[in-house]
Length: 329
Image 1 (spheres, rainbow, N blue to C red):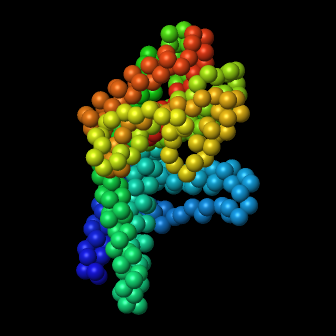
Image 2 (image 1 turned 120 degrees about the vertical axis):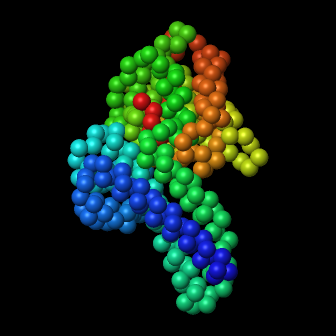
Image 3 (image 1 turned 90 degrees about the vertical axis):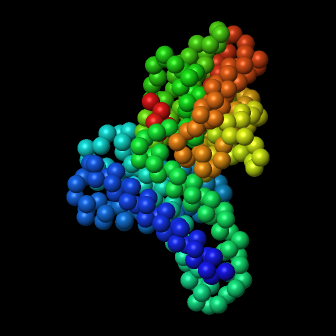
């Protein structure tokens, strides 16, 4: 059991080292002082965010949102200090690379901790539990490792399916940044006013789509339908790129943006419809494949068909393309 765990630990170490080297290589395009880059990035890689107290759940969403925004600003500020000549899109993309490096480093340190603890104390039960959890951990680590090339080269990833659908719906329309890092496009469609939302690209960014949905519902009068389009984790046996429809807000993450969508929709009694493009966790953060591109095209058609079927001319509709906009201009 120790040998099997050690083998996985060595693999995690290789993933972590490779992610670090790619991050340093990307950073050195903007800062040739390798020692300075290494010192700053190694310090940030071991950083963490402490979740707010939840014993009194009142106001927990606002507190969590504040912590996450502060941590995101911290990463981007550190990247900007290392790469002062990088533009906004490049800073966002470098921040995504840094997040991959942080994720792999955390996985390695946690597995190493339990491995050394079991080895030190001879706790076979703890070792058995670690061995049972390892397949899931290694699958996630391999997905993170596969994402390195996509983030380093700035290519669209599977998780960009939502923004890609939004881009197709808003083709030829000028947008505006209505909320930090989040764009809205006013698109006329079959006599309806379709407000298309997506994060600002082409840097790696997820924006604040929930906050913008809430703002539009408050400012744009009665809204007949809110639709979210996102990537979804496929089940084993399902095909990548399959498109499915449902109800609710299709948006992952810690839940703060989903909260904004649900609360604002409930207050006004607005139906929530979701369209998802299915993929594996590895495909979600790797360069987008031809299968997923076909799924994006199909999802855009589904969105139009749902709007025609569930709304009438003159209605206001919000369509939010959820996901990472790396490589999506």
